[in-house]
Image (cartoon, rainbow, N blue to C red; front, side, top):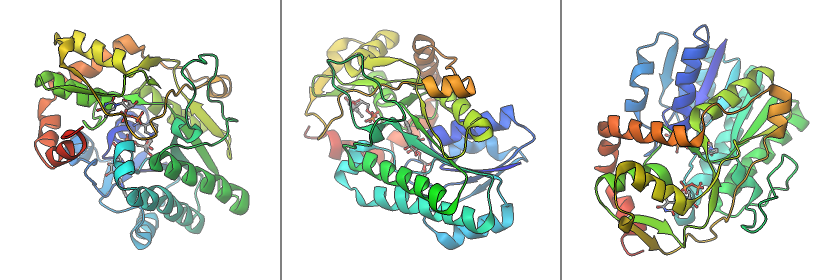
Length: 339
Ligand code: NAD
Ligand code: TYD
């Protein structure tokens, strides 16, 4: 079987590529990634040695380029990770989010219709459901929770989800969608909370916590997300949405304190900065459906996953230091300079 993975040079996409190469060595993996600031060939160095893996530097909004790849590779399954993924960047510049996340999804699905496909899988997010109040720990996102987005990022992901479901109903395209909570693990780009705090703490730099740090996210080790997607593309029901999350809610401030403790750094590095505009309060997934239908359960407990992740950043300083020494410095200055 040939599986086309878009966004495979990014955080979750690359973890998925490695997951597939290990779990399904009989499958051919075709990776499509345009290598934005978030894509990194260093991440795919090992995969490039594998004869089952092929890489194309192509934009998912490039219809001709995508059609050419379909004609050459005849994918059986497409898994679309390619996206602009950072909420803070979407607040600064929404346009590229709409282009990649919505129009890119359309181009991929049009190619699937044109050349035929066994499954198109859209990697979505729990952020399409908006947020939950902090004082109602009894509430969770189910697949029936209405779409109710807050940021340009989540709106673009929700727009794509609606288009995916429309292509299923209108054209009969065999689609599935997964909506996952926050991931953490190796190859996470250092603009996101956990790797940013690890990198700053190691450099004894301030740890910028938005608002009071009371916002809650539901963290899942990236490999557990990969396992869920693999199950959905092979055994999931066409036309269905699956929520993915491991019931691991944490306040941002508690995560940052934990990172300080693990690295032996003082909590005095924590600096409270101006809150994110429209900042979602709490995300929390009810994963009952994927558990009951596909038998999925997460393998990695947060206390183990966060230790493994911190160790990965200690062991792979070259990978992230190369990133933070480049264009990232301008980004950091712009976002945090006067905050
Ligand atoms: P990421 O930003 O680390 O990686 C995105 C990848 O997509 C990069 O390699 C980038 O080069 C590529 N890309 C961007 N625009 C492209 C385009 N126009 N054409 C081709 N490639 C393009 O993102 P991530 O955190 O790995 O997220 C992957 C997917 O998972 C996204 O769709 C995101 O919405 C979803 N998701 C992420 C999380 C999370 O916690 N990170 C949680 C739930 C869902
Ligand atoms: P992030 O990793 O950007 O993921 P998302 O916004 O998609 O959940 O942020 C996770 C949480 O951490 C979110 O509530 C915002 C907060 N945060 C900070 O407090 N400081 C930071 O520097 C960053 C990047 C995020």
